Image 1: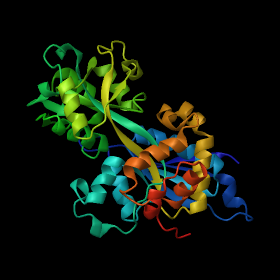
Image 2 (image 1 turned 45 degrees about the horizontal axis):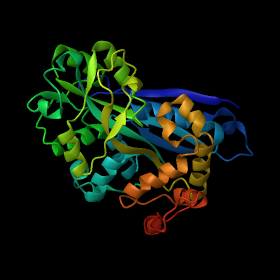
Image 3 (image 1 turned 135 degrees about the horizontal axis):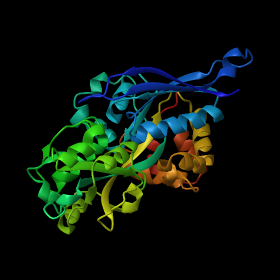
Image 4 (image 1 turned 90 degrees about the vertical axis):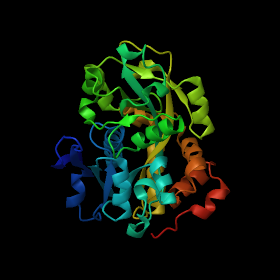
Length: 359
């Protein structure tokens, strides 16, 4: 048997609000011709667009799972933004989503992009696998460092905080608001962000990296178009952010793979991210999957360094630490509960929010 990976249709051309939208299916050809085996369970799994951290990471994860769990046939479906995958899951269009704590907080509070959405929910989203943080910050054209020295200097200026559907954009917008920065959001195509910054059409753009170390592919493209420098918040702004619940991590500028760093550290604010499956995947299937991911986490991290936060035997603790912040937002998959109990990383206070297994 061998893995079959094929591209399905492409939706929505590149443009102002357009993204490459393709499906990749991961399965084994031999399964279809073996009468002794049952047909694999189809799993349609949404993720971010091509060129994003999530788009790349789920392809790597699905390819590994196709080899280890032939009973599942996973189709990877890129969406314009992760929030669309949460809504697609909740309305029954897909079986798995790309979820962040930012989106789940809105869903739980019936606010923001999920205002009035509860009446449309057919399938309750659950949290089943947290895989990394995306740590968010800002960059300016390097030649503007003398005039733009902190976030407050962006007041009244054009800032590209990311594509409208991106949760990383919302995290950055919320952080800027918490620091009292009244910028002007300017929408540009993700693929032209670097050239727009270079031309002066925008004065700053979003940057982010998984675990503070692994930037998405599009930032490498932007770095070819502009010599950018990270723009860190001032000490006063950092204090304001922390007072309003935003954590700050200090990333190594070398991890952005630029010739000139300009700063000693890149100050970023993290969000939690996961690839979540619902109760169509049974308790035992989810438990098996999590153990497979755990066992292969170092290999995953080699293929995509975004997964480094769950490598080296850290996965169970990473799930535990994330649930400390997210357990009240949506129910927890019983397969994740089983995995964490076995690993000694379960907190009994979470028992009340474990989803009831249907299979």
